[in-house]
Image (cartoon, rainbow, N blue to C red; front, side, top):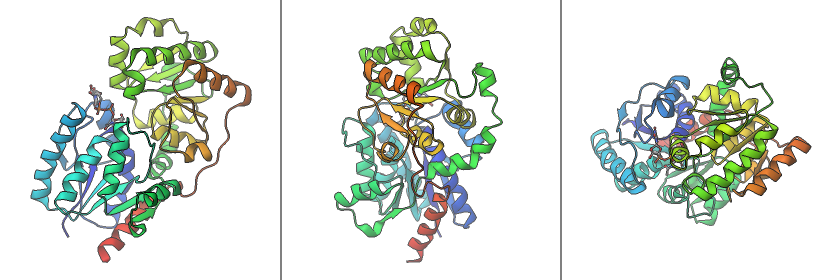
Length: 365
Ligand code: UD1
């Protein structure tokens, strides 16, 4: 059998592919791990390979940063060569980043079957590059692995053949459960001089939040208010750090008491921080799910979410990016302790196993 190519590219891919890599290996399927190099910093990429115990990629494209088009195009050109050389029996992509659509598109045109992990999520916001990536990837995928039934419904509405849709649950939760115990050994709380249960954790990186000075300034204003109530930890994405410098927000940050800005953190330290946060404020997709799985209140600093199950069943509240709303919802958490959710069906740590089974069935047929 020709190899199955597992594609990773950006930080949110690593925790989705690691458990699937192990699963396919344990089924003795020929797997080839390919890293596009969309993310390339030690702390955006390598540390995740180490901590998630993934081997060094078999193929590294090293495409690096660029415009959406430039990055996507470079991945496509390089990935086409790999496909022509390796003639894979399947290409598996995950999530919604540029590496996802780039590799799916190349494979589909070479008539190589494409499987999409985390299919069917929709924010219905076409101003997000990720929404475009999701829709297009799903449209050309042969196997669509969905995390929740809302995703199945979205795909059905778009006319996707029901036979190709497999509700398997949320694979990120496999990684979370696999590493939860280990994360307890992290000494990140000591390092940052914060006490468990008494800090707000914030991450921001969406262009819509950090690239526009007024918007980012409004969010900073909310943090200035929240910072009076509770220490804040802010592991800053490279894009965000750049913007903090560009807009001269460093001096504002210094004036907020107990406001710790750190480099992007590894998987285990970050998981330890999420588990013991009083609240998480974020514009990330994955973090909305991780907080729901862990029962930690989450305020999503966006106008919409492609993960509505985290709001309907979990601990997530979509608050938008206005200063007033962010502060209002924070005060609400102070007064009520925050939303108590439940863990959605099939977020049980066995998603990789279900995907492995479905892939074997696909080849048997
Ligand atoms: C990408 C994904 C986004 C995901 C995010 C997680 C797309 C369209 N976006 O956004 O969905 O939520 O990853 O992090 O694919 N940079 C570095 N070092 C790195 C990587 C990036 O310094 O290792 C800097 C570069 O200046 C780069 C910028 O961050 O220009 C943005 O990186 P990019 O991969 O284009 O998009 P993200 O914002 O990370």
